[in-house]
Image (cartoon, rainbow, N blue to C red):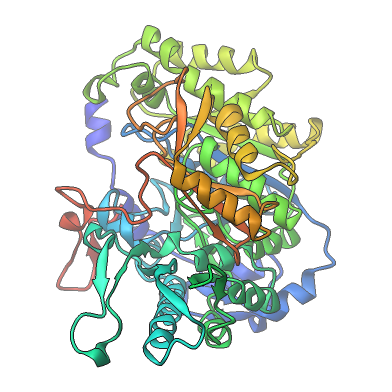
Length: 563
């Protein structure tokens, strides 16, 4: 076994050795003509605005959501499973498309090194995806910071709108983890260098503009949403918007190309639409509505993902994205690993290779809660185990019985090692579910509830909390948001991904805990209210040994260390 593991190639080795098809051939396999492609080299393309007009009357295919248990250092493989499932359907001669979020530079260089799947279930060109790709995130950064610049310039040029510099809520952004930018002072220097005030940065993918890009129907809707962004409050306490600053047109121009979904391929040439996202722990967290809608019109089965765990990604997918867009998932694939469940059961990371049914029984409660959560939306669930060579038959069988007792289909997935071939068992279970089990999807809560009631519903029903503690600042903010007329919006919870609770150290299925809401703000353009729990940050930091340490470029131009 050790010899087998030693001889395994790295993800980047596998990706770099792959023979990619020209993107026009990948597009042709799903009926897209070259005229509807905007080529970014040979292997990447944007899908033109007029493509959707051509296909909008096509019937929708089936929508499959892939999500996971709470992530652990042991690894789960949500994206790997998504990619492998798409490849498996292709092997079964099913017309399938994968719809993924784009990776962010922050984690690529910070905590994990990449986000394009793994092994023989990857999206390629992997290095491009994990670096600048087609520049969408840079466009978002530019639009965000243009708005910040126009805001500060307005104050400098006489402040005709009466903006209170102490009540500026719009933050600058950059697509890199950098804790030193969380809290800064701008405008230092001479009088001509601006007004001195405290400012902040968020990571680009936590920007409201990211959410707007993901949720916008078209350019008209994009422009309207951008215009509604609240950037500050005036001295009377009234909101000031991007429209008020005359910023909307220029921001829309910067985002013109970024709004178009990107087409790439898997290692087995299955089409993959990659657009928008990620980070469901601090933001909306899944790919764009446009990408998903386009995929549904082009294929019989669309596989998309929402993570981290189902408590974050799936909840936001169902309660925000589906509610706003009218999308309805037909089935959910819930990804777990034996190793991760044992970790939830208290086994140290260096002992996860040993069979331990006792720890498995203790840790499987995390999986149980996620199954229950998805079933609250009345969508059929298929549980899959992302297989490792150290897993034992007894462990697999224990989980199988556990899932089937709870009305879930179950399948092992070996896509990391075998690509599409290793996902056929899972694809067959998903297909069986699509054909025989009806989805009666509905959101978790009604729009008419108060914001506090929505937060309490998510906290109690999805996280399993005893109750919610609203800090005075948050309670005041929520009251103001409702007074401004935004009380009917869904809530986007910002919570750590590692635990069902707001304490990252509480593994398994915590009980008798409260969720602490310390801050709330309205993303009026995106169309939701953000509630920050616990110590969650919208600008992550770097670790003592960030992934960037292992990334390099050889003399012949080959990137190493991304994974």
